[in-house]
Image (cartoon, rainbow, N blue to C red):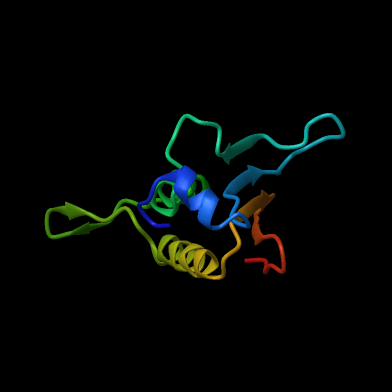
Length: 113
């Protein structure tokens, strides 16, 4: 599931559906502002889904200028917490992630972060 072929994954695990939706600032006419789901343009395994969705989840987080020696550190503890929560969500076998305003939720018996 992590690096496999999307078609083989869907054949073996028919209950897996990877879906990310940005549902912030929606109206009656707009169901979501941004969506990542299997559309045939990318191999839908967990690695690709994780690498596509993670930047979407952290795009609004502030990145202060911080140096350790001569190396810039772009991640804050909040970035690490979001990535850890996202990894934990992936372990729970639910792949529909919705971003609603400042919340991130996992649907289907889910939690809200």
